[in-house]
Length: 307
Image (cartoon, rainbow, N blue to C red; front, side):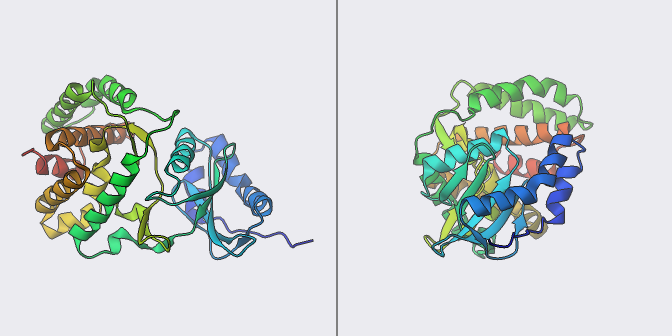
């Protein structure tokens, strides 16, 4: 009989699941070591390095029975994790990490192993990095959306319902005008929400170096909608560094031009749906108790004002 394998759960992940005080989340993180052991045994895996984590998931480097390198990813079952499984099955490794096995009930995934130490943010030339990201988005958007994913039509409706009350939470009159203006743009676009399968979170740090291809996307949050709604994460990549350089407006416009050119998008419409993302982000911030619009959101809006 093989000796049980113990995986250390990163403190940051434990903190992420216990700070809210919700019993369901505390119970999941407490049961995580046993869940890891279950899938190591079920899929005949052996650990092959130190486990890492994001805010919501544990990733354990493993080797399969035939010696193939892979990654075991565990996360609490939620709507987003179910959507990720749906999207990864549909994309089947085309421009994105390949799903090797999965357990829908627990949202556990066995994924192709990528190089977590090399993200697209490591590429010094920003045009090159944006070009890689744009090429991946084009491939992801080309795959027909399967049934069962959330639709931008519904998200737009929810945002427009929330916006009037959210405006009153902002303390600066200029911020109130911004939020109302973004909502007005979404109102004009909402009747044509699009039908492509979006990644929803493709920024530079969600593109990793790989053996199968130079770069592959990870961590999708699939959504059906207009490709313009998928541009903001790429535009915002490394914003703090951009802001410190004093060159943010030019770089943001350059990224937008490269993305829309590669994807063949109408720039006015894409700019409008990008404002929709700023609306969504700000509504989330207000929900978290913030009373001002984040400077990064304002910078993106101002950079796109000419479109």
